Length: 286
Image (cartoon, rainbow, N blue to C red; front, side):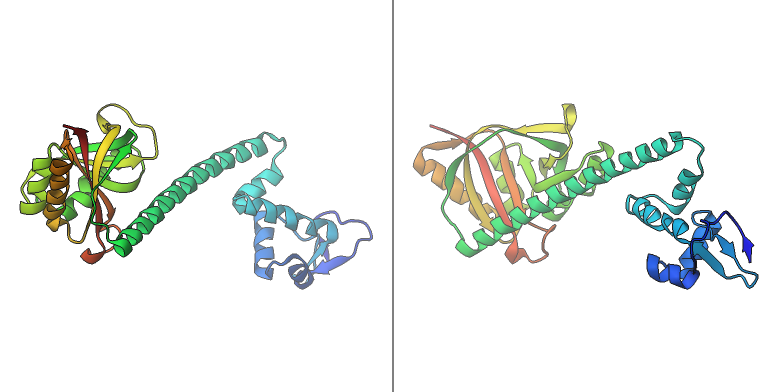
């Protein structure tokens, strides 16, 4: 036998098959560890057989733990070879930054999933109850990511907007919650829905990162007339007529912009029978 490093006195030496079973690693991986200098056998026989002391085998839990933390085998080998702790501190700091970035992304993903699940639950309730009444409710102000655009007559192009997706990427933000279309007037919204008429529109959605300036728009706090529309977006004219009739009969006067909040749309389903939209009109009493 030829010794590649100092053994542990009278410690028993274990063959690679025994080390594989005890450490939960394949023999191929143990040979790879040897090549990287992570865990060299204490003795290599003339026949090429590898033998390990128990002291050497204690490196296995260390390597496994560092792998669990996201370290590559090359990084682990580098840590074990360094002559001071600066390299370890640098590597740990680098992986801490990676973990923080992954945690942020995971938090954003969770928030988006929770918001989407709530929209689906809202839509399921509306589809089950099928409310026809117009309600009046207070909405708090909220800041939304905003891209001024042009309604082309296609709700698909407005809701799943390539321009808006590119805009969100350019401003380095992430969005969640329902797509909202903001029309300059109720008349614009009605004609867009009923006739597919082109008009200016604001593409709005909740951001996950802070926004300011030209990229933001505020949904103003106040009282809103609200009604759900079920079905194809091109049929929303009937819902607007229902809201406007209620306003006239109840002494309310829509003022300002008109908003369409898409609860379920092309992002969730291709079946228009499952589309649910909330029409929101800021209002004041006459």
